[in-house]
Image (cartoon, rainbow, N blue to C red; front, top):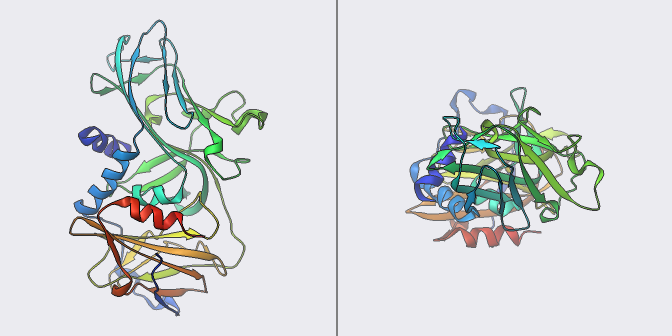
Length: 338
């Protein structure tokens, strides 16, 4: 769950050509489908990226006066007087350790493994984000108890996405470290005042988010569902034989869209391929298929641009793979995509 990332943070605080052909993927043996299960090596690469993205720090908190933590990109965490206590119910006067991560670009979503995928009524769906955020507050190495709402001010201009209609989501991390977004309960997480994004203040684009309790610490998101035109379909990406769900992942980026990334979330061992768990892609959509893997402690990646066909299959050949010792090169390759 969310606490997995908390433990990881506290422990350590181009384009390549690929071949493709259109086939009907319904002939696969569904009994060979598995959920993703990465090994420690790939997990550590993602953890290191998250540690680098952490823009938190330390502040002194006085119970009578409160405190404000000023993060990068004009974001603030406002902790009012007497809004937090220890788990034993005692007032806090002392140094707070704050973890704060904010992600707006698809390149960082890939290296941190934070795709914009919603889970609604047991089904995955696609999101466009106005920002993904991780927040944790600790006193003497233990997470604080929020007894009155704390507020996070986020500069919405850091995102290229249209914020109208966006709502709040909580991030749920499974045992594999994969992040899925669930609709937030307004009793836990809500926009300030009338509960709507901006509250009619479009000329002053700041998200004012209230965190009402400690269970909403961790990942949260300002997102909305997105539906691309075209018949719904799936996409299969066959990866090289020395890669599988334990050491690799495949993401789908949409051409011209920087504020979303989708992950193929099932793996079929019979075909050594990744797919969506349901038909949520759109025929005719221009996309970039991004294969990311770990080998010998390094990143290995391949990027292929295509227009999605109906139940098309794409192959990542070995000779398209690029190896790098740092995720910044992978980020740069993704940022350079049209």
